Amino acid sequence: MTAKIIDGKAIAKEIRGDLAKQVAELTKEGRQPGLAVVLVGDDPASAVYVRSKKRACEEVGINSLVHRLPQETTQKELLALIEELNQDPKIHGILVQLPLPDGLDEEIVINAISPKKDVDGFHPINVGNLHIGQEGFVPCTPAGVVELVKRTGVSIAGKNVVVLGRSNIVGKPVASLFLRENATVTICHSRTKDVAAECRRADILIAAVGRPKLVQQDWVKPGAVVIDVGINRVDGEIVGDVDFEQVKKVAEAITPVPGGVGPMTIAMLLKATVEAASRA
Ligand code: NAD
View 1 (tube, rainbow, N blue to C red):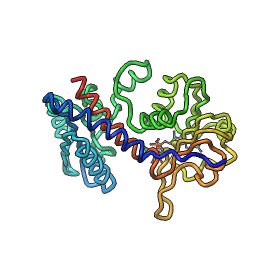
View 2: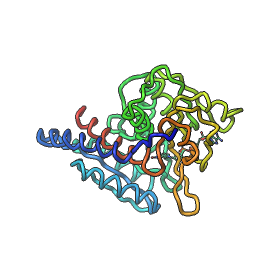
View 3: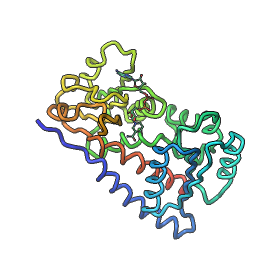
View 4: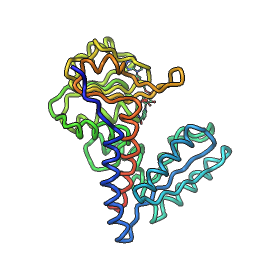
């Protein structure tokens, strides 16, 4: 068997096409969605992410405003900007690009964003809403993972989902989202006794660890769906957490890296911004 390759790029493009129509409607009603992106300091990777978010916003017609602040910005100055954006009726989503330079407290900064504009879904109120199953914003990468599985036509209810990784930005929210979809969810982490054995029970396996090619062919049940969130740089090449060439021989469907989960993250950010504007 050779797995179906889940084309995250194509699916994300489809989502952006749908969003562009919704944005056009909202704009006609005088409610053009607006996303403020705050970038502090000069981390080159962050600058690249911010540029691609701005480009994606422009493509679907979302008004995006990038606030570039110098490395030496104080916490007080950053909080003042966030408060201004919280009050701005033209801004529906606020995203502070992480990591922040030393001396700025990410937790305090994230907590200052209005939960109604927290399109990244990192505010404790949105984290809580996800866990108790109430409406709110959900972190973009986990939302993209579930959307990929759904759009591949895979049913989730009753399936064994195994998540590798328990971070607050990927592992835990992914697990919550699959639980919400009525899957039976197992979370594995660095202290799990036999990760390979846990993985072999998975109908849907999500790898979000950050270890190149950790998931081997004999970790995967034949016919499983494998979603690789990992992004690892090895000898100038980007590889995932899954040994793609080997695992595709046994999986039913698998995401490539790059071109799988990555493009979905930005598509989900745009979707959240449009939702925020519709709710406002
Ligand atoms: P993290 O370092 O915060 O968390 C890694 C998790 O993996 C931890 O919970 C740890 O307990 C667990 N872990 C470590 N070794 C393990 C092992 N041998 N078996 C099972 N679990 C193990 O990382 P993160 O922020 O959650 O990101 C994970 C990966 O996803 C990284 O490669 C990151 O670059 C990538 N990522 C991709 C996107 C995207 O848009 N595609 C977005 C966010 C993160």
